[in-house]
Length: 329
Ligand code: CP
Image 1 (cartoon, rainbow, N blue to C red):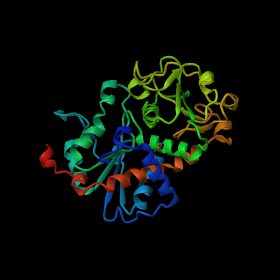
Image 2 (image 1 turned 45 degrees about the vertical axis):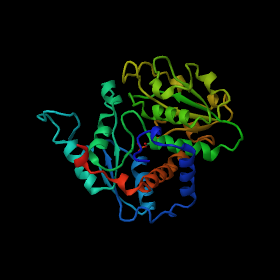
Image 3 (image 1 turned 135 degrees about the vertical axis):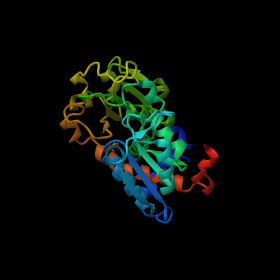
Image 4 (image 1 turned 90 degrees about the vertical axis):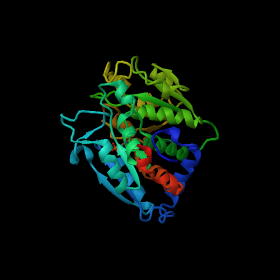
């Protein structure tokens, strides 16, 4: 694995899940792998789980992790090529990223979409500029359109908890929210469940909340939440803003919030959410505090997902770990 930006960077999802679960059973077994290596975790946006779990994962592998809140502590970065930097941006990513590439062996980056310009967001300009200019492997800590460490965690959590000898039925359901949120988690979950290809996968959302087909192709999509929930083994709850008429809230029908009454339609489904969650808006207290919720287990598994990914990158042949930017630019 030369980078970790999406499910497309993973050749064998099941093997990566097994690697993560092996780290969960024995966290320090590869403590020597990252010795004398350093990861820079760059945050252009806030985070709790991603930030802490990635640091812990790196430390479990013997790496030093340095966190830099670029968005609040660093110079405002410019990402557009040939920009005339007479506005608020102070430093171009093509100057900053190569420096960080010299400081670190791996760069991990969190960016969010603007939700204003679909083409810009879906071009993944921010993370692609880091990949282009850093000269070291890049790991996504959530990008404009995807959240692969979250999705790997979600597949790990489903594999860990599903004990039956059949495919689970997994339902991704839209939930209400008070502000427009990115499509990243829903896109990414769809991409990973489709590529994993070991589940019956249903996506349900109100009209006008269709996600990008490039991620949902392969899933059954319905606007009938009750029908979708029938016999589900897992219900993944998440809000997202509109994709077609980009970044809007069309309806915010509270009836889409998952309740115990709705859960009774399922096969005693386990309930997942990436967190943070707006209680009694996205998900009811009764579900979050009930026996079906596995959100804390899910969040705890973020460590093992990150550790498996960092381990793969640390195991790359030396020639692929660092490229000479002078050859590339
Ligand atoms: N799920 C997730 O990415 O959480 P944070 O935003 O707290 O990192």
